[in-house]
Structure formats: structure tokens, C-alpha cells
Image 1 (cartoon, rainbow, N blue to C red):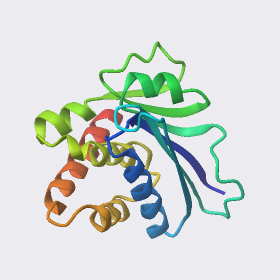
Image 2: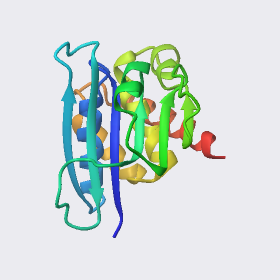
Image 3: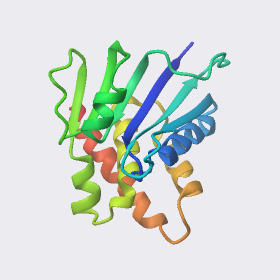
Image 4: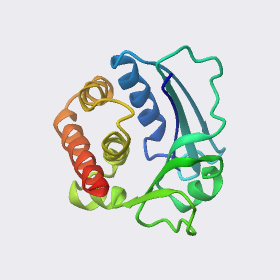
Length: 178
């Protein structure tokens, strides 16, 4: 059985809830089972938020993450709040602005926010850049299924921008694992 518990965390408004939905849809397109849950503080936009996705080749009996295999964090606050319970052999992917306090895990510190904000000039695609990074580093979903899920979920007229964001994230992730 192959199962991954994935937690996406950041600030409300960074699109991580949508990112979780897209990741779950990509897993389903790959022929796997997936369940997605979400949580955000009462302050919503600007507060810490998280989306969790369980992806499995078998039936999923419990829809909550116990110890995640893959943890993404885009803000220091979300890292501090949600970064606990990552498995010993888990993968942590963070924006380069985050101080990981020398966690004893495999950590990829990458320019996710900078790519969305400064390279692409569109902060609204931060979540898509992050999904590309996750797919490249972990292979939790296929690149084709992820692209299809992204294009199914993004607003009409933004498809090209989101495809470019996904490609840039994938490229950043591939460079990180070399």
C-alpha cells in the first residue's frame, strides 16, 4: 500500500485550500484515492491556514492526518503552528524566508514566494508554484494529472499564467533534488 499524508500551510489568502483541492483531484486523476480537509484561523486572510490531503492506493479509513509525510509551509507562523508531527523520514518544503530552526528532517528551502511575486509578478499563483515544487520533489502525483487538475480549477482566462507557474515550480523542485 502506498499512502501519503500531505499538509499545506501558509497564510490565509495564499490559495492553499484551493491547492489542497487541486492536489486531491490530481491524485484521483492518477487513479488513487484522496481525501482533503482544511482549517484556518478566525482571522482568515492573513492568519495561519492549512489544507491536508491524504492520498492512497487503498481505501482511506480515517480522513485526518496523524503524522505527515510531506509538509509545505509558506510562512513562519504556519511553520511554527503546523510543522509538528512530520514523520522522521518526512519531507519538509518551505519558502526560503522561513527559519526551520535546524529541524532534523529532509528540508527543501526554496524561493516559492519570490517566484510568484517577483518572477511571475502574480502573488495569486503562489499555490500553483508550490504544487509544482511538491510534485517535482515527491512524485506524490503525476505532472500530467496535476496540470489537468490545475486547469480544471483555475479561473477562466488564467490558464496560461497558471501553467507557467506550475512549470516554474516543477523546475525549482527538480533543481532542488539534483
